[in-house]
Each structure stands twice: as structure tokens, then as C-alpha cells.
Image (cartoon, rainbow, N blue to C red; front, side, top):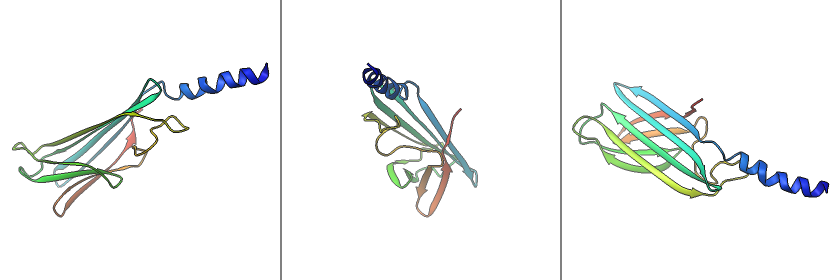
Length: 130
């Protein structure tokens, strides 16, 4: 009887780590140009959805900007006429690891978001949102 109750609790405890969403935010301003990043992960049917949004404000219109997170390129976009660049990515139905976090690339406390345009670089550090 004791073995059965332990086996029943293990799936319950694993599922408990997947019940709430987690969010991180990053921001930094250099020479009037502001980089921000929002990252979220949340459970869906035992798997995890991830989304990341990167924005640059007051940048040079027409500049090509590449965003990366911890060295992983997320993509590139062009700064609009208002000095803004926006990039968003979603990763669907990612299997969780043993801790209930996405098994693979993900934002962690202290992860670095980088925006590059030619020789210019801005880096912001992700911190958890309470």
C-alpha cells in the first residue's frame, strides 16, 4: 500500500511545478537607446509554451538590428521611422525538464539579451518578475 501511495504522489508533484506561468524582464538604456525584453513560460497540457518579446527604442531609423539571448540568435529586424524595433518569438509545446522548466533554451535569472547593429551593442540582464 505504501508503494502505491508514493507512485501516485510522484506524478502529482511533477504536475504541480507546471501550474503557474513564470516571467522575466530585462531593460537597459545606453546613449538614449533603450533595449527591453519580456519572457514568459507557462504550462499547457503538461508541455510548456514560451514567448519572448524584444524591443529597441530611440534607435537610428533604417538600422538593421539582431537580437540574441545568451548567444542564441532570435532574429533580426529593421528600425522603423520612429526609431523602434520589435521582435517576438513563440516556442510551442516544449517538453519540460525534471524541474518543470522548458527542456532546452530558455531565459534564466541573469540571462543576457543583446541587440546588435553594426558595431553598436546594448545588453540587458533578465531578472524574474515577482
